[in-house]
Length: 125
Picture 1 (cartoon, rainbow, N blue to C red):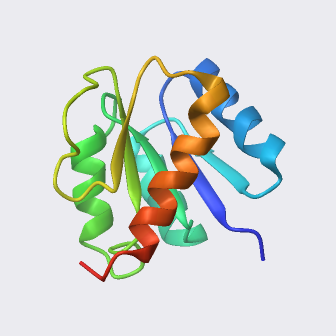
Picture 2: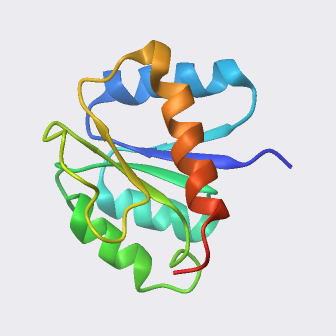
């Protein structure tokens, strides 16, 4: 079974760009949401292997959405990568990593794979 990545961003162009990058690898099945509320519903139903979560969105910013995901047994251990325009900071507690926006689409896949592999090979939180 192909692992699923849930992309959560209120900008349709960014979601589309990430979808294209991930689908080109043929390693991931891609789901998308345009807000935190929708992301939580999809994550609970689809149980993605990884979530890419924008920091600033309507209807549930990144931190609020992460807290909702962590409060549910279905998603409490799902690695979540924060996507933010406030790059350069270390990841906030609870996030597997951070991807700074704007990002280079040519290196995005490698960055996502590195964070995912690191987060799934670490001891349980």
